[in-house]
Length: 313
Ligand code: MTE
Image (cartoon, rainbow, N blue to C red; front, side, top):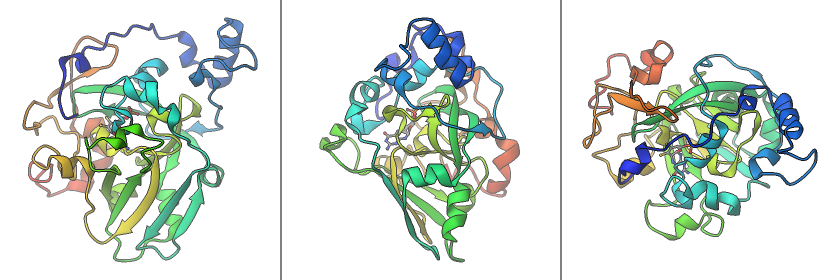
């Protein structure tokens, strides 16, 4: 995100979308086995070996064509593993997503430390097919599996003066070699206003395409805020803290002129170095219009009523 390279925007869709990816996960596995691509019980491709999750379809899913699994899992931003789009899929095998705990504390009545598997059992998992729009100008359609952040926050009972939620990613240079360099201040941090965090669209994702989250996509648990630029969707979360003050965010700390706290997708508010009016869906050549709040205005515009979105960018 620091430097926009032309190559970032010209990823050819080398792999045709296997029709199998549109089937449900059992059919998909069966189809893979039938095609001889996945031995019935074997160490196949790492992504094929990812365990299946149980989930039901959730609300607000777009019916737009899903971006192929291959593109979602090989074209990533995860600076803990390097700054090139291919670095996370090549290097994130050093991340150990189990055992993993998430601490939820701060201005709450019942602070708790959760084992991630406890979270997976505590909340029914839903599939949410969301658009993800990156500030760099590309977008994807991703079938996440997860549960609403609101469900977790309600469990810890926010105090009356909680106003914001601060998120922190894992900080461990042994697992995350990119943290040995100073490209960002580590750990990666993000924040939301409490009402944004409680919005039913805001998801904690633990999987995609019906399978557990691949490391490069932020295993074992990451935030997804579909009406904001992709960088707000912090990966590999270890801490969720409720506060009464607006928390710092990594990209704002690194370049406050270019990245604000809100970072709502807005075609009318340009990034200082390029327009945000258009985007290119990964796998397509044409550029399409970017929609206000990434197309989720009906659900979220009310959160920003009366705010000057140029000032609060
Ligand atoms: N979270 C952490 N911890 N580190 C990162 O570098 N990159 C962000 C966001 N979350 C990032 C992160 C950016 S810039 C984007 S566009 C999305 O993750 C990309 O998510 P994806 O790779 O799953 O598509």
